[in-house]
Amino acid sequence: MSAAIVSLSNLRFAWPGQAPVLDIDSFELQAGERLFLRGPSGSGKSTLLGLIAGVLEAGSGRVEVLGHELTDLSGGQRDQVRADHLGVIFQMFNLVPYLSVVQNVVLPCRFSKRRLNEVKALGGPDIEARRLLSELGLDDPALLSRKVTELSVGQQQRVAAARALIGNPSLIIADEPTSALDADSRDRFIELLSEEARKTKAALLFVSHDASLAPLFDRAMDLSEINRVKETA
Image (cartoon, rainbow, N blue to C red):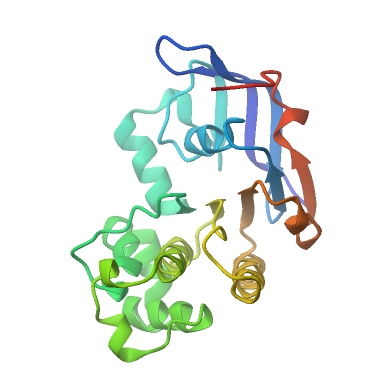
């Protein structure tokens, strides 16, 4: 392990007009580390990921990701850091409904020259997208040209994972990414995330309420260990 790839200090966050959701004195994720973060529904897990991904702004404190102090950046600058360096599997997938499966997966390469250059070395965006999809069990050529709205929830979840992984991100953030998968698909999914992270020496922050997954990671912790707000709405 080397220097921290994510570092939080004195982090506080509350939605407007509501009680605080997060109150974290310190937290670090090391480069190359695979961390399982557990917490029940409503504990602030997705909010924390949103802050690390730069989607949300902290009320106070510091959020440093890959050497970028996100609290000092504009919204557009945070978006570029995310596009260049983060692969995010959102809980609601956030797929583009009118695009095909492959078009959704290659989308990050349209917003990041760094990620585009990474996949060019692997044969190009389409080839790398199809490789990732195949690894995730989506290798039917007819399926890959369909709009994502024609897929099952479990298939959409795997498309979202392939999109996050393309272009060798330095940090992979996964928010309840196995909730729609059966046990076999879930285990293969986590195996692929770990394989891709190891290949590129990326850090993996995996969030779930399912404590049984914890042994599959380098380190496991409960959000309550760092968050002084014990209950949230």
